[in-house]
Length: 111
Length: 116
Image (tube, rainbow over the protein chains, first blue to last red):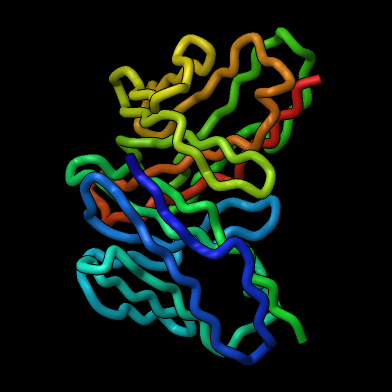
């Protein structure tokens, strides 16, 4: 089966840095994605890691360690608009682009 | 970026009726579309994978006769919830993958279904 674990809630101060961890157990692994979802909205793609290491995109970075079945999303210079739910998702098939999502981490940014 | 639309954005129906939800890729061709269901404060659960011109592949536990999926063209997939019941009330979201594209799925804005 597939399982992904991430914290259910995180609170951080505006301007700070926050890290959201994700550990996974899947039958097959081809990459780890991160999505952001505001309340009532659609998920939007943030990043994708297929190989070990850090990927940086502006204020957001994502890290993957395949040997540890672990990844994280790092958000820097937090802004109030970053308050949202963040989901990690695993792509577990080579030919299939299906994603299995974690339960999400609700990030609250406070002044 | 690639845009995916869904229609309707919300729908309220009586128990026992059927509801059709459309998912369109507006500026790209999508050979594969995905249908998810999301209950309040929960994760997205994949219901089925829809491939243009072929039958959809349903996830375990999803009734294919209840959730009818049709992917008639490279830009349109539809999900029909047949004989809807209150427990089917949920947020239904589709996503599409660019043909030959990277590993990114583009999500529609979702459809909020409420069954009375």
